[in-house]
Amino acid sequence: MNKGFTLLEIMIAVLILSVSMIVLLGLQASVLTQEKRDSERQEAISVAKQILAAIELYPERLKSGSQPAKELLNFLSPNSPAAKESELFSDLEVEMISLPDFPDKDLERVSLTISWGSSELDKVNFIYVRPDPTL
Image 1 (cartoon, rainbow, N blue to C red):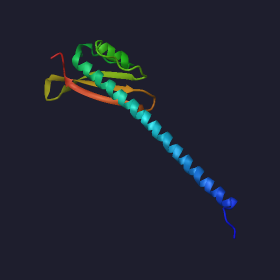
Image 2 (cartoon, rainbow, N blue to C red; image 1 turned 135 degrees about the vertical axis):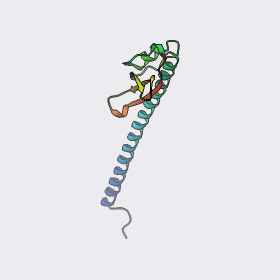
Image 3 (tube, helix red, strand yellow; image 1 turned 135 degrees about the horizontal axis):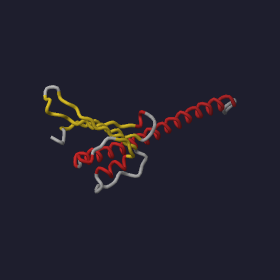
Image 4 (tube, helix red, strand yellow; image 1 turned 30 degrees about the vertical axis):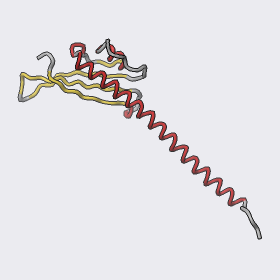
């Protein structure tokens, strides 16, 4: 009686094992990429919250423009702890909105975009509406 495996059986087993390992390694790489993107998004949200808080505290320093997020945070609130050293970039737009039913009441629309890459997935947008601070 012949005991053991044939060469063909061993080659098929190795092939199945190799394909399984390639799939698992691909999944691992995907998980690491998503984890890095999530970490960057959390950092961007944290910096955006600090910028929006500084806008609330120092409305007179508010101005539109594009600049690194750390510079914007330091400009708005020089006494606060600065944002981490990072590649975050901010785009801040401020515009006045008039209410049709209340012509003497205006709102200020603050649009803040924090980005850290060139992809659309590498951006976080915030829109903040508040009463006109000059009234």
